[in-house]
Length: 184
Image 1 (tube, rainbow, N blue to C red):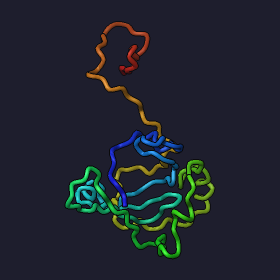
Image 2: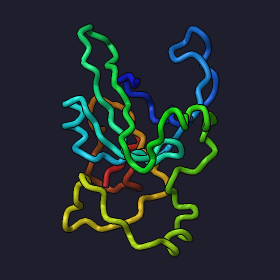
Image 3: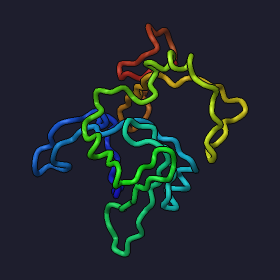
């Protein structure tokens, strides 16, 4: 079971610790898994229809999954969804294996699965590329293949009512204003 909640700041993806009793989300918090996901169908259409199909590439959760919205007669503030494991090479009967029991610990100290550390050595020995999984969109003809950066740092911004008011004529010492806006 999954529950749709409000968006959280991206920095929450690094938080581990104890949230005090009486506070929202109270209790022990760990980073149980981390990785990436790949939509197997148009995610915007899937979300609207109440069925998202995707592949997970994590330390613990791998393979093809679906999130299916439960249509509830009662109006709820938080939409309930079912997380369903599809049959693929990673599926195992629950009677034989429970990832929650077998791998309960945090992955906070681990690299992202597929990160660049160790990838260069592995890629030198890699076997020929497998065919692309069905359902994945093709890249545009002019797209360039490139490795993703090891880490992304979002550009920080401050909400303001409008653009800065500056004089754009006359000599300037730099292209920055005192407000931190850059005029290029």
